[in-house]
Image (tube, rainbow, N blue to C red; front, side):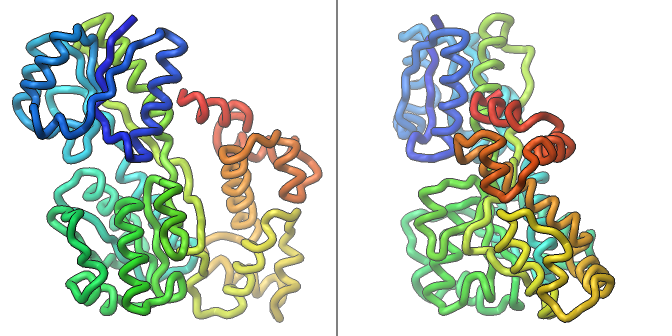
Length: 387
C-alpha cells in the first residue's frame, strides 16, 4: 500500500482530471494512500520542507507542481520518486507530466483554416513551455499555408490585475487586428480574458474575433460570454499513465523513466467560434447548413439545394475555400460530433447513431474505426479509464 503525496492545484480542472486517472490506477493496483498537500506549501516550506514531510510520513512517491529549482535533486538523492507537472518548464532531472503542445497548436490552426479564416492571432505567455510550444505549433501550421500570425504575449501572468477591463496594450492590440480573425489562446483562462476584453471593447464574438481556448474546462468555458470553444485534452489518461510510471519507479528505481505526454483529443465547438470566415456567401451558407444539420443523415445533394450553384461549381468553390470536398467535410464533422457524444454521454453506439439521424450504426462504427484506429466502445472505455 503506497503512500503518495499529491502537490497539485486542486481547484484546476486539469489537476482534477489528473487525479481521476491516478485514482483509477490506484484502485486497480492498490489501494494507495494519498496525502493531498496544499499547493501553497511549495512557497511556504519549499523543497526542504516537502522532503522533510515526505521522509517523516514515509512517502513512497510524489506527484506535483514544483518550481524548476536545482534543489529538486534532493528528492533524487533521497531516493523518492517524483513526477512533476511542467506548469512552467520541463525538468531535466525527473520525469515530467507534459503535453503534445505543438500538436495542440497545429490542431487549433487546422480548426480555423477549415473555417475559412485568413487572419490569425495567438495570445499567451512566452515564458511558459505549454504556451510557447502551442504558439509554435500554431504558427508553423499557419505559415505553411502562406499566412502569418499576430502575437500578443505577456512575459508573466499577473492574476490580480484587471487589465482587460480598462484601456491597455491588450485592448489596443485587439482593436488593431485585421478582422474577421481566428484567435487561439494558450488556455481557457486566457481565452476568457479575450472574450471579456472584447465585450468591454464592443468587439463582436465570433463575427469579428473567433476565440479558441485549450483544456475544455467546462466551468470557465460556460462562464465566458459567449461560451468558449476549447481543445479537449486526454488528461485522465495522462493521470493513469503517471500512476503507472510512479508504480514502476517505486518498484524498479528512479533512473529508468520517461515523460508522460498528454495528447489533444478534439475541438469542442461553442458559440465563440461558431462562424465561417469567407466572403463567398454561397460557401458560408453551405457551411452553416452542414453544421446545423450534421445531426441528420446529411448528403451532398441536400447541401447543393441550399445554393444557386451546380454541384460541380459548389464542389470546386468549396474545395478552394475549405481545402476539403463537401462529402469529406461532412464525414470529418460527423466523426467529430460522434466522438463528442461518445465522450459526453452514456448513450450506446446505436443510440448515438439514431440521435444523429443515421440508420446504420455499424457503418458509422466502421468509419470511426478507420479514423481513430479502434472501435467506439474501446475508445470510450480507454478515455474514461484513462488507459
